[in-house]
Image 1 (cartoon, rainbow, N blue to C red):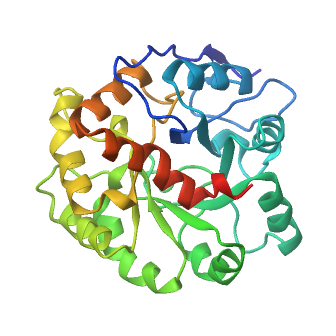
Image 2 (cartoon, rainbow, N blue to C red; image 1 turned 60 degrees about the horizontal axis):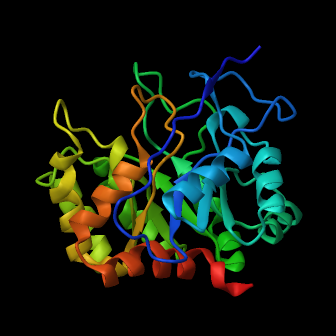
Length: 288
């Protein structure tokens, strides 16, 4: 039997969150009705109802679901959530070039708008995370993603991104870099390369700061990364919590992280652009 743990609670942000705000990196974990494969972590008790309560607590009307590794290529849990909360959710699935056009079209109609490709290596030198699909599949899938108007989300280190992006940008698929590219710091030369792509409108950068290395320092140590990214191109920045924080102990507080994000911005207009306008444009929330 798969071990389950209670999903982490969240506090309400102290600062006002703009109407229509979106968390662009979250996960849903259903109950026993959704088969999960072997997982390197206990599955959070984070079904749609708990996810919706989290959003309400944060003052968010919209969210993007990213396929969790234990579900592999089975989209059933995500599709169920998209169906039951239609209009407020979008999905990021995984697939390689064996996926059929009919399947991609059905996913599109359900609310999926992207595929995710992973180059990050699992701890312990065991290669990619189990079930992960690398960017070689993106090369094969690019024409079909362009036809659907989908994006490719890339989880890779800043150094990997610096090497891969010159090959991926010409594919003509919108590229979203997860977790700000996992740079080692604001002075990381690979992060500078990411910022050049950002300024050129060639990528979107997802500010999910909780995954970034910071040693014994708190999240405050990561402010220079956010400041540099926002200064480079606020029209291509997205915010994500990564709730419910698998493989993170202790789990962060999404409300505190959102509050910190807003305080660092210090600008209501910027907050609306990043939390509302950017995800609405990228994920098509206003297309219905």
